[in-house]
Image 1 (cartoon, rainbow, N blue to C red):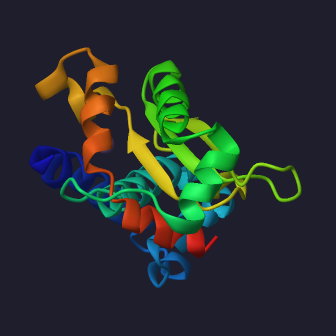
Image 2 (cartoon, rainbow, N blue to C red):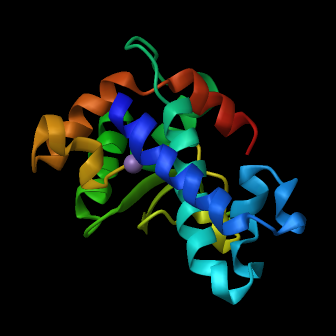
Length: 182
Ligand code: MN
């Protein structure tokens, strides 16, 4: 995780700053504001802004939803998990299936479900460093990096083993706070 933070995420920070150098309209924005307007970036830097702003936001978010083991879903969040996936085990199974099923590099997200469609939570995945905010979608409440760089050093090719271990360090209090802000 230290290498992941200091090398991989740092590269996205450096490359985003390079792409936005000399672009005053983009300089005062938060990273979330940049992510939400990647489609407005000038064509010549659009791919760089998309990949690298996603790389920064996604990793910031990823660190924010992990903590020492010991937190559990409770209250409104737990009720939403039950209503959407049956129970916690059903949620974990569905989330791991989506995350292992994401072909190549990408992310799996737990997001507030579409308004008026019944389920309060849904699982989506995205490729590369994309995320739902770029498509005008909901702000995720939980997300996991399934790029090989996230797990290859310790888990080799075993993405599911990494996900099983990762679930022990999910910060459910942070997820609940994200869900409350939806
Ligand atoms: Mn990563």
